Amino acid sequence: MPACFRVGHIVDVRRWLWNFLTSHAKRVDPRVEVVLEDDDKRQGKSYSVRLRFGQHLGPAIEFDFREVANNRGRLAWCTSVAERTKSLARELVASQGVADARPH
Image 1 (cartoon, rainbow, N blue to C red):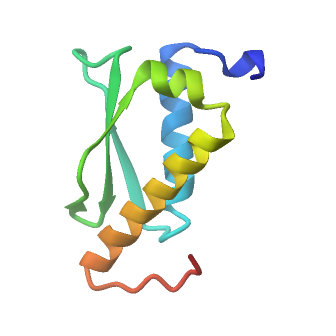
Image 2 (cartoon, rainbow, N blue to C red; image 1 turned 120 degrees about the vertical axis):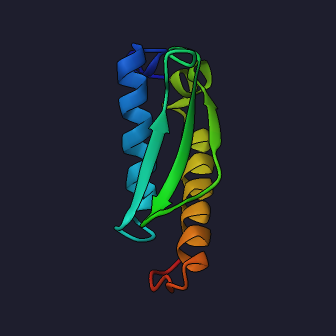
């Protein structure tokens, strides 16, 4: 794994996770947003992520800081998280009666 992806600073890992999830959620529908929570009690330990479509929020997804920091350079882990994100985004969009016209 490239040295630039090893562990990393809390801010860098948070930014990477938000950008990664956002890029995959928006492939389903550009109106899907990522809400990342890392309040004081979570800082440096974990992240809670929810997808938002309009006023509707999807279920929370928990990410451990170390897991993200250690695996963000691994293709298999990234592929799994990307597919999970797109699946949740499709479910959220569909639950609002909006069809996903993009190929899966």
